[in-house]
Length: 624
Ligand code: GCB
Image 1: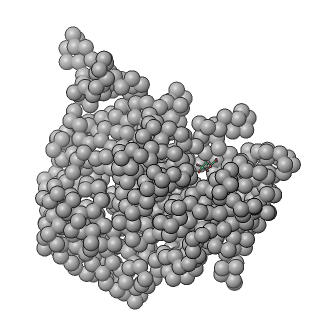
Image 2: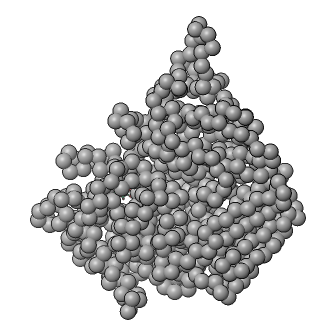
Image 3: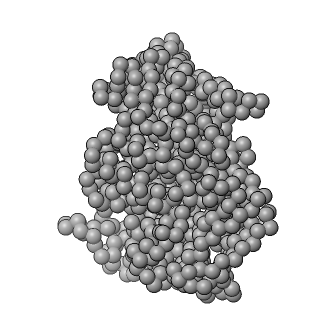
């Protein structure tokens, strides 16, 4: 959580209360300092090589005996001034790691490393008059502390969300340095907790930049199609200061729209207006408009632009409606893992490859599992016309009773929604995956559902549930019942099932039928099985492409018989690294459930799913 905040001149609680009643996205819980749409701001990149000190004992942070936090630590980036000085670290003489990038795949010795690395980068800077500067970190897994020129400026918990801290006061003319402590130790109370089925990549895994803004700037904005309408836009613009009567202009040049609004005393300008010429965003027509927002004059002038699509997403009984029309979500799940090279994905190129494969599969939907992905993915999904399920890493069995775990999950959810709320592609916020049903868990998850709804009432809320096949309560002969009590709180039911892999044989799907007590759409958010690309044999031999192919044949036939099914996101697009997958010669630390191997080879099951999706599309749009 951030320890640096902008001054609004009002307590965040009061400020939030004033706004929450008014807006579709409530600002009540938005992180006070997060600057959004950084892609379109004036930035100075700090990407590239950073000096890195591997510090498994936290020597640079903690006292050697008490292990309490020491005063200065390596943030000082100290250098001996005389030959007598004793300083037992040296950034300049330390080897570098590339940013953005996980440390695990940059040095063989760090592949399994789970502890601390200190990053240091020196750069020259020229402070500009009337300009504020923020250090912006795309993601640092898992816990990080940021120092600038020896002063600690902020810390952050959560490995997949963006944060920034103001550094205007710390920066100076000429040479400057940033030191960032990053620790990826798994913690029982963390989000995620100790056990995951993905690699615990550590480091500054996304871009690091300095963002320059005027003294008073456009901190955040949201513009969207008003639910229930086809031509009405609504939203708000939030200035960094709580200042009334500031003029804010919204322009959409392609529609010759120019509207001016005034801020209220909290610095917020709310608006709505309609335009009959509006073309809506959809997978078939991923129309984006350039939207400009401007405020202030002279040195207080701030202008940002963005490419934004407008669409509505609703549910009606078992149906999911996109722009008012029923749609089947033909999807696939994706981890944020780089094609061909492994390691964390973080480039436009990676996004193009991964989402390009999804398109080739015939998908109109992707589930970005199990945590918020980098912004390139969302912007690419906007452009390619892929609907997105976005998720936070509330995964398996976390500390449901621990208030700080809940606060942490809420904060990650809030940061996720804050960064991505203007992406038309996102249609679902998911609050977690396969969380075992207990009262404590359901209360925890309900709080997250409320948080998401409070922040954004324009999207659907879901979670990937699990029907415990071993638990007789959820079965009635061969019928599986989606009776998780959390279903009552969700707009869309997500369900993970592994008939034919963890449970029984692929052909068992032929006898399975599904029931739900809820009058809601279901997305089968996971199903699948493992195959090592290139391993062929009989369909009854595990890990062959033929087993996986056969499984997809039986699965798709079963899915066709679920009357309330409105989407699928099988597990998973591409093989990904996992420390839990130990089988030599087959897994070698990879989860092999990919339809595509980590080297880009398409497995046989890819084509089964592709054929099924083509058929689904034909049924939905005959003549397409
Ligand atoms: C699941 C999890 C996913 C795993 C997958 C598997 O149910 O949601 O994170 O990777 O199963 O392969 O076992």
